[in-house]
Length: 275
Image (tube, rainbow, N blue to C red; front, side, top):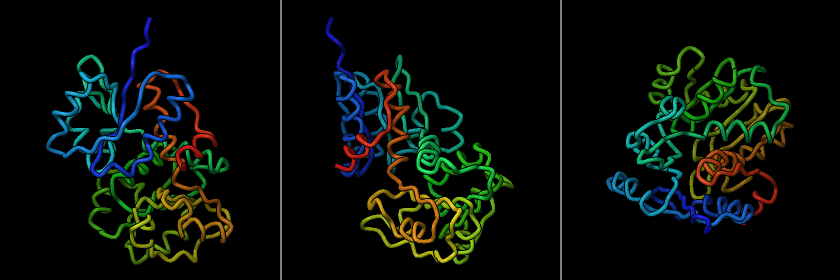
């Protein structure tokens, strides 16, 4: 009997830069699966029509990236609790005429952190999060659920951070952006969720002289792989975890849902994605 040809992909705008096709195709080849994973640039007004059509074309589901994560959640038939708490979906599964939404960003973040800094203890002290966008929401939910006692949140627009404080409660403390250097010094864990420092974006201009040994510092930016934040962290004796791991680990549950195999994140995968 011929094995079915299984399809999945990533939807965003723009999406040509995505490393996800390289990532999933590596696993598809490794596990001898008959199928493919493709990138699709879709306008927001067309998402509903596209999501309804894709299952008819043989798609098991899609990843969703910027700027469509909130819209994907709204268009889903059902959503997991964590997707609803984060307020966005990065994973859709097409099943029996339904669109099932989930968000694996927080899971991917924690798995990357634990792989890159296995000694990190959530209870060791506060976590400082820079930025208050969609990625920050996923990180905050994951950290609170993991048992971090306090999240210190600093964002260039204070009102956005204050709104998250209202939503997530007393374990969030908002610090003005001009005081972000102090927040970096205070965190046992420091997480940059902004795009600052990414190739083609402005640098992360936050005072980093408070970085020290004993901290764990991670940057969700993975292009470049070694950001200024991570360089300064290593120089200060902190444990630095790059942003590629989150991309790799968030993909694991998606691949398993679509293709029926739980893949591994290893050095061969990193090499394949970095190309």
